[in-house]
Image (cartoon, rainbow, N blue to C red; front, side):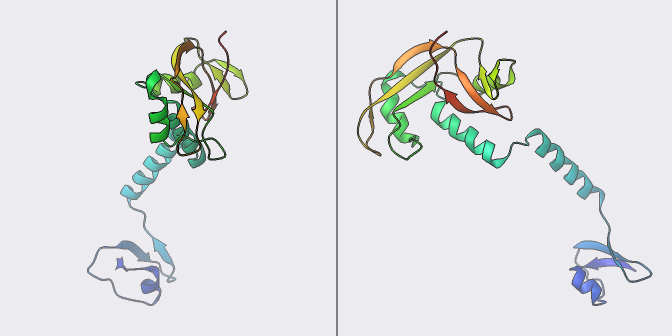
Length: 178
C-alpha cells in the first residue's frame, strides 16, 4: 500500500492516506516504515553539500572575516574621516573602549582577500602581499567610548601583513615598511 501520510505516527497507527501531499511513505510486507526519497530531495542535498564545501568556512571564521572587513576595508576613506568612520562602524578595542590605532586599507574586498590566496606565506597563518596598498592610519587623540576622537589620519603606502584563516583575512598585522 502506498499513499501520502501526515507523519510516521499516522502511518504507525494504520491511518489511511489523506488527499493532501506531504511526504510519501510505503508499507512493506512486515509493516516496516520506509520513506521513499524523491529525486528532487537528493538534488537539493547534493547542492547543499557542494555549497557548504565551497563556502565551508565555519561561522566563527566568517564572523571574524566580517569584523576584519568592518575594521579595515575602506576603499574610499580619506585622512579626514577617521573619527566619523570609526564611530559609525562601531570599531572598538578588544576591551570595548576606544581603539588606540586603526588602519583602513584603500582597496576593494577582492584585492584584500587575494592576499590570503597567494603564495605569500610568512609563517603559519600570516601572509604579506607583493604590491603595496594605500592605507590610512588613525590614531586616538582623546576620549572614552563612544566619544573617541581621532587625529587626522596618516596616508601611506605599505606592504600589508594579514592573518588568514581558511583563505579569509581575519586580522591586520601592524608592520613597518620593508
